[in-house]
Image 1 (cartoon, rainbow, N blue to C red):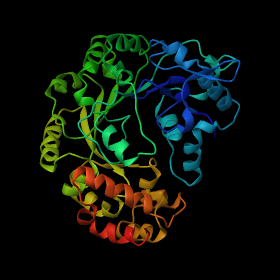
Image 2: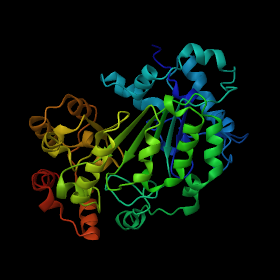
Image 3: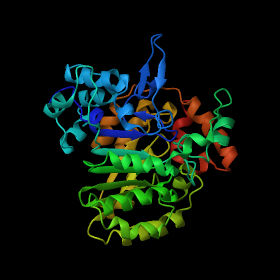
Image 4: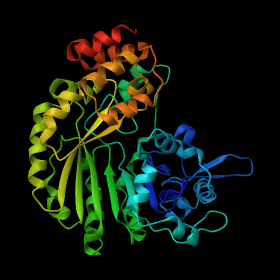
Length: 397
């Protein structure tokens, strides 16, 4: 396998809640460097979003920024946007680049064949589409942000008075536009994987017609759907259409147990989560539908992973998604003594590898102060809910 090639810049669409498009979800989003954009004669960026292109996917994929990345990869260079993958590979962790290269049909030889000298491609056909369907959500998880859930912005601006956020709500409405789904269907002849996220995707029913169109076109039998759902929404309307796809994977976002989970994933209730999980288990009795638990690992819950994994031992498997932004919730930056306590309690190799990749800090002040501010807003109590973690954190404030 090439040390720099990745199939995603050729065959992948990664949308974001406001209509931005990036190389993938793992690419470096700092200052928008991974986004689709052209550059004018004054070296100014002209973003190519779902809104500015009116869903013209040929324009999006053949932007100056995407074309440059394709040229770099074929020349054996490491694009700066892809640093995260290369960094993970250097410490022995399988990267998204490696994972997608293994499972997608598109290889470097095919890329060379269809890529022009300027890095553009003539035929845009997606094999993998990742859809973040706006920010309509019923939760405001502490590790989330206002761009991914509409319930966050008031709390965000209270906790971050020096960095307030405002946005045009209309930018999040593209998932409600029939034209988007019709034009995406035109580029879906080779489609094999569709990731559907939110917001909360089971609250956004506009995408159901796209699924029905894939069924009626005969393509669904070759397509795997992957949902990321917060396990608080029971939506029976999808049960029959899902049965027509090659596979449907329901990734169930739960971060901790009972009160601790409600603290992190506000304002979820544990009894609702358990009821929804029973519905999901029932749906998964169909041969082509399965589920897994997807735990977002942050400073809040990393000390409690042993109890979590023991409780969900009945699940097919538990995947882990580590928080990197905001940095004060990134467990890789925890003080070394807290990292040692985590590993002593839960010596999981994936966790160990992740904790060793970051430089430890002995300053937990930002985490502590913002946590207490959120407690005031949401009537939570960090000290009572996470007593062991609180005692450790307080030593570094």
